[in-house]
Amino acid sequence: MSAVLALKVLVMFLLVGIGYALFRAGKITMEGNRVIGNILIYLSLPAVIIKSLLIEHTAEHTAALVEGTAVSLLLLVLAAVVARIVCGKDAIGNFAATFSNPSFFGIPLVIATVGAQSVFYNVGFIALMNIGQWTYGVSLITHEKGEPAPTAKEVLHSLASAPFMIAALIGIVLYATQAPLPSVIATCLDDVAALNTPLAMFTIGVYLAKTDLKQMFTRSQNYRVALCRIVLAPLASLALLTLMPISSYEMRMALLIASACPVGSNVAVYAQLHDADYSYAVETVVISVLLSILTVPAIAGLANAIWL
Image (tube, rainbow, N blue to C red; front, side, top):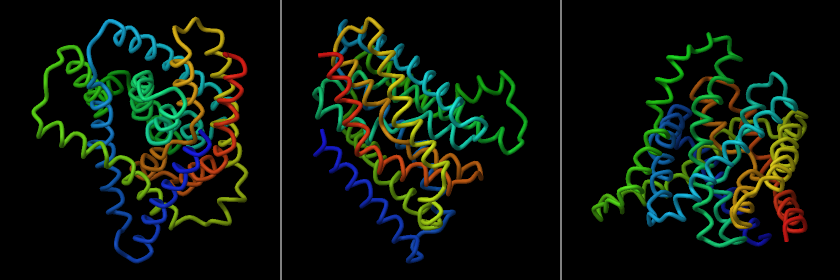
């Protein structure tokens, strides 16, 4: 796992560096970066969700999907509670500490640890996380800015029209019906989903170019968020996964890795889209990624010592 983690961090920061250089060279503007953020939210990430559900429909897969999704919901609620306790009324801190990066950062680690077939256990986690960011995460940011809280009707309407919810429903229908996609559609879906990682990292690089690096490494809130996201929340998740009667070791480990990943880059995307403090959001991503080089293998090693 250590070698895979080191490689993913290297690729991540290489892509961040490209975004940083493009902004510094004047080849991309903040408005252009906002457009990239919209492409991520409305196109690329939904493609990732749909693609993850294009697998063979079997009773075993269905049972695993239901179980994994139910456990994922509990893990995300647990992370939100831990974040609220640690970060208090800090909206960006709560968002960052609650939601990890289980797709780009987590999936390669799951493959390296328990095999490619175990990625399926993370489908529900990824879908629920994106829905949670779209609803709970956005509500944190807008509430801090003094905007009125949305009504229940507005929340339901927002959720029903959320690109991640629509993508999840499309994916479930395709999984249930096993309807074959035309090759041109399947190829397009693959290509659009592949944009997720580079575009997300490019946006982080642009945000970083407008960030005070000295402030990033000296701001105490960044380390508080990192402590919550990559230490406290994963330990709480480990305890919950140990106590629950989960059907397989592979599912336990896949979900634990998703829970132990650093801050997801979407916190910066949503912060910019809603005119919040995206510099602070970027800082939480960078600091947590750097520290996760040590914490993710440690959490996985502790789990193996308990479960095996």
